[in-house]
Image (cartoon, rainbow, N blue to C red; front, top):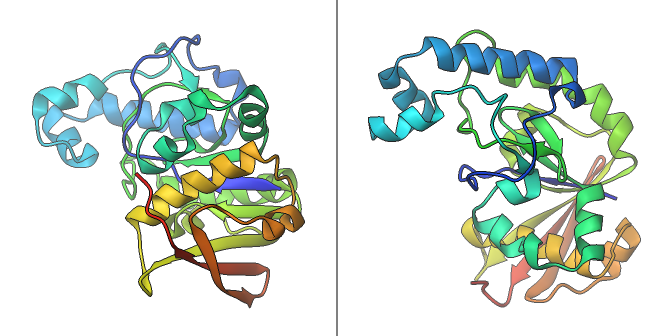
Length: 243
């Protein structure tokens, strides 16, 4: 069972790993990376302020740089935000970290998708932004499908956001979750519990749909299961709010 996660706008700075290993990227990922570098190089600070969604021009300057010689860290550690705080990767035991490293894949507006243990630099690329010299959304939709269908296998737990169906729609069997609080669909707590689910999956060594469906997640209660084609949507009530 492979797990898909959405990235986060916020990212940890720095890194203790060497610079980005572009030889480990697919050619199409390098195409977008090169297009991003050109976009950053040729745009003014004012233009990048709008493109990044950053109001203060002095904060924009930080990101007007090449990514190829920056320090890196694992993607699962690079991204911060609600879901990644709930996963709390750095404080998990080695076995739980290994399960995440080997089975979690994180969408990226820059790289398309990366394995949790793939080392990436700090970058800025807000959701929905389109490069000036290539449509990254259409490009990734064209190039990710065959690779991911083959690589992710027959069971995919999709804990990402609906936006990333623009990048990839699995052909395999998919389980996804809808989170309710007091009968209403929620977003903030959904992000927290997606991360919490990854944490509990890793700590309990859950590696298949059967084990997933048999497991009782702390703070969540089953409401119903909806099925449509290859997607099983599990509707869950949040019974205990996270931090």
